[in-house]
Length: 187
Image (cartoon, rainbow, N blue to C red):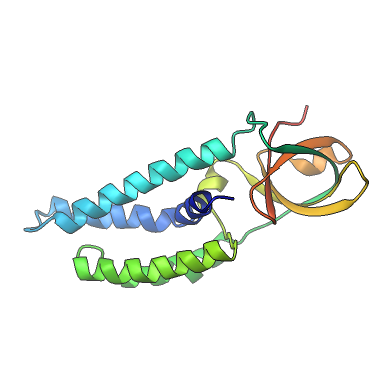
């Protein structure tokens, strides 16, 4: 997976934080801050990166894009129940310690966030992504068999209910060594 796709998934997983920052900055602008540069830059960057990340993921997760797909038989599928509240408490809430209307606090946040992003992207760690959940994607831990009857374990991201389709052929494309996305709806 490209670094930009990894970053897109990572960035969008912080959607509750970004919405909160936009609200805080918009409130500060509404109250006629004497120097609104930090707020304007912050809101612009968040909206711009969010838009680019959404477009990138929509292209990568497009089920009609059959480029780079492989066919597998779905042997088993268990939905991965990600704990959203644990993610929010562990990753998002501590970031509220920063004041996003003061430029030096934003710089401190960016240092912290970029180190965290680098580590997560480098190690292919993807936690709860609330945006994918809103788009009705589910994560399934699956056993798949290929044409050589080899069993392969993958986490598949899809909008389908995979356990209802055991024994059927599905097309998937790799995101990285652990994650794949279903490339075509099961017929």
